[in-house]
Amino acid sequence: MTLTGTWANEYGSLMSLSVSGDKITGVYKSSTGSTGEYVVSGWQTDAEPTEGAGQVVCLAIDWHSVEGDQQDASWNWVSALGGQLSIIQGEENLILNHLMVASSDFEGVANTGVYIDKLAYHRVETASENPRGKQLNKAKTADPLTGRWDAADGTTLLVSVIPDFEARFGYISGTLTIANNEMTISGFTDINAASDGLQFQSVSIVAKDSNKNITRALGGWIELTTGVLSLQMLSNHITTVDTIYTQTDIRSLQFKKLTQN
Image (cartoon, rainbow, N blue to C red; front, side):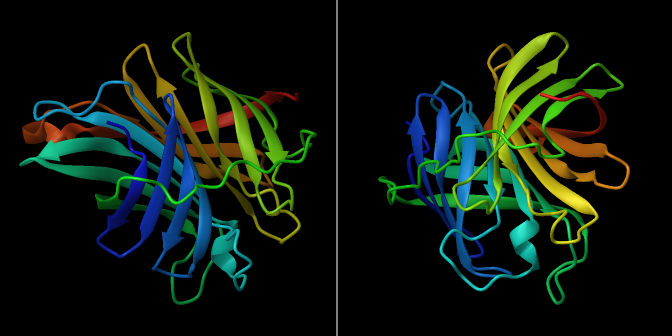
């Protein structure tokens, strides 16, 4: 069993996902705030969910619509989500903790901040609706996020950013290293934050930790005036249905850039 298929949450938003190995790609159609179609990247662990244990997952979403909708402040935002697919009374339940990174004010929707929510999804289709593949420029960009970042506890990020073909947002690649354990990352960043006059550049990073059989989702921003990268990290664990309230823990990390790629 994989997450391939279309999923709906309690707000009526639809998420169409495709899985290749442990890598997830897809599109998200939102019904809250603004409307549009948005790209998704993520990871799932290998073991299928059972009545006794879930399958952990992490997802990154960039909220710059790829369908040419009316632009608004949320186009600078990203999200990081983490949790697990569980079998509850014979039904699939995808329960994710959500970090919505609002890097600018959106009147009537949200002020600048990182917002926490818990979302429950159910499967509505077993096939995906042809999720979009990556459409990249070939060259890495000299984005403020590009380079090596170190946190005080020894956690390290090595990040490259490649703009999508219309420079709407940046695709993230590289590695996350925690306690000498290196993980491949994916995700998104707002490459237009500076040109749009924002103080914060939103960042969403996801990784699969095969050594511990967990996934990690990091959401936050670079403060462009100070160069500090502040992220909240969701670490997502396999649990039983009875202990699903312990599926995700959170901690804060601050990074400083040491080198450029």
